Length: 537
Image (cartoon, rainbow, N blue to C red):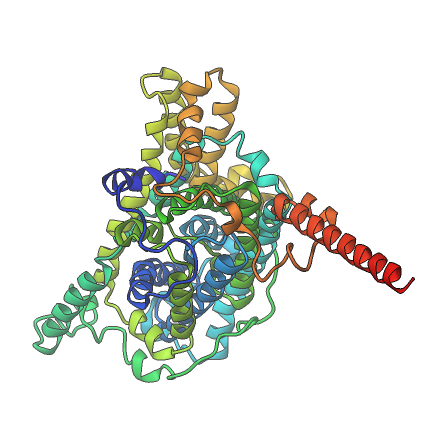
């Protein structure tokens, strides 16, 4: 949601230069590749962050398989979202909102990695013992994601998201998004949009030169060894050229109550952020603000995407990429076909095993530098939501400050005092521990609760400015809501029953128009039949 302000100045500067392409399918494959590069950093970062908690720190070949899988599933989800979902040119990919609860779940005593997995000399990636060790954890993560995604599917297709948004404002969004990134500072943090490939390539080449000239030490225990380009072994030569990811490739998913509740917290954060992305994308594409039925479909399809991601075993869900919304503002190209082509590139990339291996072989210091930039940007985007509120109000200052500080201190205390939160029921203890060690949930819940209970006007809370920002027309927008209609004539040619308009995902005018056309055609048929009878008489 907070991404809207990032593109606000860009919109104002280019107010007299509308998008080159308005939403219909017009191909531009160079721009499609740009969107692919923009999403590259996040797609690569998520599996690499999860690998340590999955006991895969020293198994780069499996890391490459995870990277290929998340590319493949992101391609599928992008196609579903553009064609059947919100129908805006918006890319789908892994979400950092799922990372915090996932890491909290995997940090439970029952899922902590054995000490020997941290020693590269003791890890045999081909041994059945090691394979079962990490796959058990992955299957647990898969099950939690798949069950939590059903909640998102229900919220989207039932139209409940519109009801929930009445109570969610900037003082809920700001701590939630900020605490997605802040707890991950140990990992060092993530990358900026379009400079990722250039910076990555230059740094990688520098490390390669320092490796072949033996400037970097060859001793595995020496400082600087991890910067060598050969520090991760021969993963590129071991990786297959072609590998087709498939559902259940790591085994049958398992389910635990603690994991499900933790991931649901990430789902709620992801949904709220995606709603904001839809409005920002519509603006930059020259489209009118998305109606409720389009938002409902978009959230529902994202839930289906999370379900597919869980089934395929990416270890993550999917969400709309704010970075790619920003790319629309830079290129001024708002064609659906551009994103469809970008989705196909992601799909094909996921089937080439060597590409995933190349990304898995990135030296650790380069990854740390990537993380540093992006997580700082995510934190700043979260804080920037406060621009809509009155920050001269002591009420708002207290709510935001308390939510952020509690979101950092409570998880830290719980991690160091797990024995003080025992209820006697193992499952309940795990649920409490996962939720209270997820800073995003703690801060977001406190912000939501305090913002809706402490008295304050809508202007003071920022709700008026926030909603006004949403309801403003796009630059150069065509006042035609038919661009959000369902594809392939659904509703206008096929599902034309009068009750179709009552579905939360259906454009009401479409169903009404379809029913009227059907009624008109029936009347014309009866009139022609009467004329034929009269002629015969």
